[in-house]
Length: 81
Image (cartoon, one colour):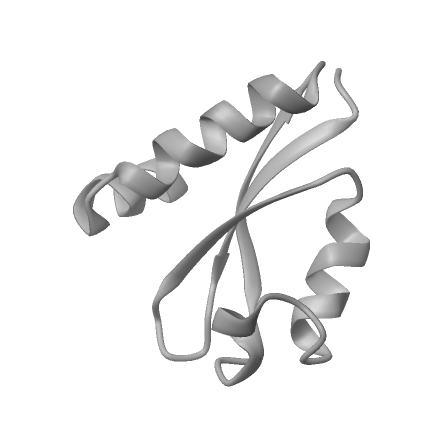
């Protein structure tokens, strides 16, 4: 498995946030502490609902972009697995 991750969080207001990291646990803690992305700062607590692993940063960043382009319905299907 790779060292680069794309993750999806469900925020307290039931919105979904997608991001990239090399350490998912640390990044989720940062979001929960209000130190993550500006978007999640007022929407804590957050819950990790999806994670994908990649061998390269570029592959992960490409997937992050793809997920961000999905409709809300498609994102819900993704996190439901």
